[in-house]
Image (cartoon, rainbow, N blue to C red):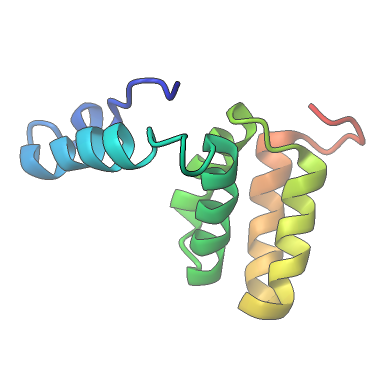
Length: 111
Protein backbone atom coordinates (compact mmCIF):
# COMPACT_ATOMS: atom_id res chain seq x y z
CA UNK A 1 0.00 0.00 0.00
CA UNK A 2 1.25 3.48 -0.87
CA UNK A 3 2.29 5.69 2.01
CA UNK A 4 0.20 8.76 2.85
CA UNK A 5 1.44 11.74 0.85
CA UNK A 6 1.64 15.09 2.61
CA UNK A 7 4.07 17.00 0.37
CA UNK A 8 1.34 19.24 -1.04
CA UNK A 9 0.10 20.32 2.35
CA UNK A 10 3.64 20.54 3.73
CA UNK A 11 4.82 22.86 0.94
CA UNK A 12 1.69 24.69 -0.22
CA UNK A 13 -1.00 24.03 2.38
CA UNK A 14 -1.21 27.63 3.59
CA UNK A 15 -0.62 29.27 0.21
CA UNK A 16 -2.65 27.03 -2.13
CA UNK A 17 -4.75 24.71 0.03
CA UNK A 18 -6.99 23.36 -2.75
CA UNK A 19 -4.01 22.47 -4.95
CA UNK A 20 -2.28 20.88 -1.95
CA UNK A 21 -5.34 18.78 -1.18
CA UNK A 22 -5.69 17.67 -4.81
CA UNK A 23 -2.01 16.72 -4.89
CA UNK A 24 -2.12 14.71 -1.67
CA UNK A 25 -5.62 13.26 -1.77
CA UNK A 26 -6.39 12.78 -5.46
CA UNK A 27 -3.09 12.42 -7.32
CA UNK A 28 -1.28 10.43 -4.64
CA UNK A 29 -4.19 9.28 -2.50
CA UNK A 30 -6.37 7.94 -5.32
CA UNK A 31 -4.38 7.65 -8.56
CA UNK A 32 -1.05 6.44 -7.15
CA UNK A 33 -2.85 4.20 -4.65
CA UNK A 34 -4.58 2.11 -7.35
CA UNK A 35 -1.93 -0.61 -7.28
CA UNK A 36 -4.40 -3.20 -8.59
CA UNK A 37 -4.05 -1.51 -12.01
CA UNK A 38 -0.38 -0.47 -11.98
CA UNK A 39 2.17 -1.12 -9.28
CA UNK A 40 3.87 1.80 -7.57
CA UNK A 41 7.11 0.64 -9.22
CA UNK A 42 5.55 0.80 -12.69
CA UNK A 43 3.97 4.19 -11.95
CA UNK A 44 7.39 5.45 -10.88
CA UNK A 45 8.99 4.32 -14.14
CA UNK A 46 6.21 5.93 -16.18
CA UNK A 47 6.35 9.15 -14.18
CA UNK A 48 10.13 9.44 -14.42
CA UNK A 49 9.92 8.87 -18.17
CA UNK A 50 7.26 11.55 -18.60
CA UNK A 51 9.11 14.08 -16.46
CA UNK A 52 12.41 13.48 -18.25
CA UNK A 53 10.72 13.77 -21.65
CA UNK A 54 9.32 17.15 -20.65
CA UNK A 55 12.58 18.34 -19.09
CA UNK A 56 10.99 18.83 -15.67
CA UNK A 57 14.14 18.08 -13.72
CA UNK A 58 13.24 19.33 -10.20
CA UNK A 59 10.18 17.06 -10.25
CA UNK A 60 12.21 14.28 -11.88
CA UNK A 61 14.68 14.31 -9.00
CA UNK A 62 11.87 13.94 -6.47
CA UNK A 63 10.28 11.13 -8.44
CA UNK A 64 13.59 9.33 -8.86
CA UNK A 65 13.80 9.19 -5.08
CA UNK A 66 10.25 7.83 -4.95
CA UNK A 67 11.16 5.35 -7.70
CA UNK A 68 14.07 4.08 -5.64
CA UNK A 69 11.74 3.63 -2.64
CA UNK A 70 9.33 1.78 -4.95
CA UNK A 71 11.99 -0.72 -6.00
CA UNK A 72 13.36 0.75 -9.22
CA UNK A 73 17.04 -0.17 -9.32
CA UNK A 74 19.91 1.98 -10.46
CA UNK A 75 20.39 -0.31 -13.46
CA UNK A 76 16.75 0.20 -14.44
CA UNK A 77 16.93 3.99 -14.00
CA UNK A 78 20.11 4.18 -16.10
CA UNK A 79 18.42 2.04 -18.77
CA UNK A 80 15.33 4.29 -18.69
CA UNK A 81 17.44 7.43 -19.18
CA UNK A 82 19.55 5.82 -21.91
CA UNK A 83 16.48 4.58 -23.77
CA UNK A 84 14.74 7.94 -23.52
CA UNK A 85 17.80 9.81 -24.75
CA UNK A 86 16.85 8.72 -28.27
CA UNK A 87 13.20 9.70 -27.90
CA UNK A 88 13.27 12.72 -25.57
CA UNK A 89 16.67 14.18 -26.45
CA UNK A 90 20.33 13.68 -25.71
CA UNK A 91 20.66 16.89 -23.63
CA UNK A 92 17.80 15.77 -21.39
CA UNK A 93 19.63 12.51 -20.70
CA UNK A 94 22.77 14.47 -19.83
CA UNK A 95 20.66 16.51 -17.40
CA UNK A 96 18.97 13.43 -15.91
CA UNK A 97 22.09 11.36 -15.23
CA UNK A 98 23.48 13.66 -12.51
CA UNK A 99 20.14 13.45 -10.72
CA UNK A 100 20.22 9.66 -10.91
CA UNK A 101 23.80 9.65 -9.60
CA UNK A 102 22.71 11.81 -6.68
CA UNK A 103 19.78 9.55 -5.84
CA UNK A 104 21.39 6.16 -6.53
CA UNK A 105 25.07 6.92 -6.00
CA UNK A 106 27.98 6.54 -8.41
CA UNK A 107 29.11 3.04 -7.39
CA UNK A 108 28.36 -0.11 -9.33
CA UNK A 109 26.12 -1.53 -6.60
CA UNK A 110 22.35 -1.68 -6.93
CA UNK A 111 21.58 0.39 -3.81
